[in-house]
Length: 237
Length: 237
DNA sequence: ACCTGAACACCGTTCAAGT
DNA sequence: ACCTGAACACCGTTCAAGT
Image: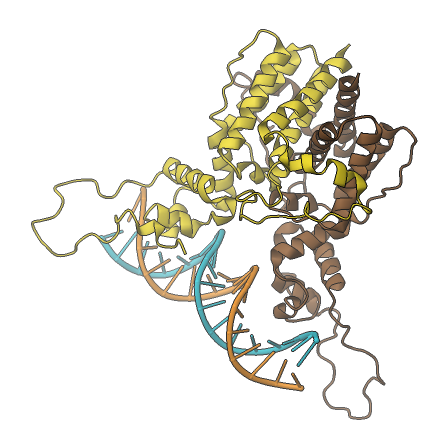
């Protein structure tokens, strides 16, 4: 249905004849770079979801043959790694607060907003991911705050996994919504809240409507994050 | 390489001649049912990972044409929904303890063990999921314990999402490991811990080795779960 | 009613060739 | 050095046909 979108730029079918009327020396053909590929891929996923990302679609977007991409990226797995590291470069790592756990809170919330901006990117963690420089810097910053708060290295590593796992998981479950349009990536709705058998699932009938109709996901994330941080603080004493 | 595995049962090439020597009335052709399809799909994913699940491969495993599956399952999305609900039926919902939060802890740990048994199944939550009866029963049980602990419906719904999001997220990040064989689904290693630039990421250099070489994932999960539950308890007073 | 076979519109990726 | 074109071995899914 949207298979012509790659040709919309019109950079492909330039005139063949008309000698003397060509463009002066305009670089019609922008050189393909790894950065251009990754940026186009992220934009594609931001717009239409991770499911539509393919070398062929991406190549069309770049007005290039699918095989041209292989000159700059080894395979699709590496492309996903590069995309993840590219968006992780947007995280603000400057410590915004002298109190380590408060600075950490701000950092994690920034990561949360990142995955809110780039929906579908959190799903990449579902596969096996090779971390790049930006990913390493984010981990390092989180560990830095945890160590500064007084945690021993082993406890800091465990806390990082808890916090980051919670963040990634929240972005997968937080998008499962019933009947709200455009909730699922493919627009698929899950209308399970309508006509619930109250006899079989009485508690769901009571509290179920707050599962998805409550406060927005980002706010719910912040509440759960505070649970984890409070637990961390309590465990330190 | 393993493309012949579907024919190993030998149910396909029965003798055509030899009249009078046929099997008496043995039902050589086991009828295809939705249950058989879902069980085979779960077994396939348990063995080789979610990536190898295809209607064609599944059909080979069942000694059937790919199209035969469509008689019992609408499409691949529905198959994933059915698989998830099938394994969620293995969760023990009986309250093992009079104290609600202790019973809840046991329940969540049982879900964790479930995703440990069926690796790759937690990844299904990355897409849009329609919940089945078993999935609803699990949510209902979690909400029941939270309500019994004294949480108001709205707070119980929020706590469910925190706990379940943490569980699913932990099963995705917890499998990202460097260089350990068979860690990633495709066996892909991520050797980032070797030769880390200590100047750029000093905290990672200090605590990074505990990220993956520490206690096993299940134990780390339990520690993080207690953080959440302690935070819940503290927030109730 | 249930399964098959051929076909369509896609994939990632390899190989040999073009400029 | 960088891009193209054709081809291979896969996908999910539709359609028309078999029994």
